[in-house]
Amino acid sequence: MKKKERRPEEIGSSSEWLNAMCEVLKGGVLAGVTTILALLVCAALVSAGAVPVGAMYGAVLAVCAVGALAGGTYAVRRVGRRSLLVGLGVGVVLFLLLLTAGLIANQGTSIANGGAGILCACLCGGAIPGLFGRKPKKKRRR
Image (cartoon, rainbow, N blue to C red; front, side, top):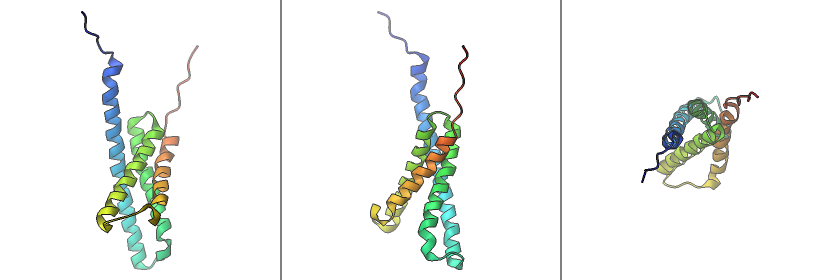
């Protein structure tokens, strides 16, 4: 009996998936670093008195969206396929990184303390490059 040979698409599909997941994780780390640096700038502005403390929650949401936008742009350009899922994946990775940092720093956290807003900001920030970053489909010639 002959063995069934795998098609080239089947061989490459698992490695493509793994490469895409690695790029999503790299984009999430880039988003996390961008967010942390921007939050550091916001903290310095609050300490200097340039920004009121009451405006900090809105600044945190904006910074999360910008961080997810940066990481999502990187990941969408590197992967090239299924750009919306890649962008949303970066947003989820960023949210999980922020949630983990909050758990480590505060020994407990809940969604009621603004976590839902941060999750929405991360997902929306990641979805924007996913929507606009995809390449246009090639037209079929007849």
